[in-house]
Image 1 (cartoon, rainbow, N blue to C red):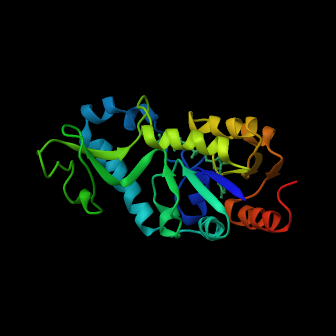
Image 2: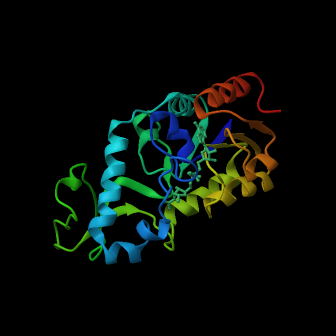
Length: 232
Ligand code: OAD
């Protein structure tokens, strides 16, 4: 079966990583423009880095949960790709190989001058970090508001939305474009859409199966359903 899973912050919630919106979310009490924009970064790089270092700390303590693991298992049993909006790397740590990171990765840095990218888990030792090649200011290699998504990742995601027979949507509010558009495209190309979320989202309205549940128990149900006979 050709399966694509679009994941958002909700899939990592049970690993102890807060989501963005809602109570206790990363954005609570903060306006995203104050932290996650190029303008905010150049105004106060240290402040923005402090926020990312705090998130790095939370993520480094987290482990993949059952939902990440089930997706990794499904990759071994089906033709499965993951498109994630998460920057935490937990899908890869769970063993998934076919992962498209639409919003970048928090462990990677990018030079604001020469554009070089590299991984540095120790980047928070001295903030703001600098590019080892040219000495310019380094930023987290994540997508900020007002920035375009990585071209290749975006192109591949649209291709996958057309390719999928089953399109799973796990733990995303469906409020951030262009990722939020992908399930609609998949549905238009004939995929059966399955949604796992404790809350009703815009994607639930087009889902053949809406599992109103947390990611871990919801993904167990998805796995069962697909084992038996597909979503219908
Ligand atoms: P949000 O914080 O917008 O939404 C999290 C979703 O997870 C909500 O729909 C919750 O109902 C759901 N949820 C909460 N707990 C859950 C659980 N245990 N299991 C499953 N679902 C659960 O996060 P995203 O939709 O991922 O972008 O946000 C999209 C983008 O907005 C992020 O990638 C980030 C943010 O601004 C950038 O930083 C560019």
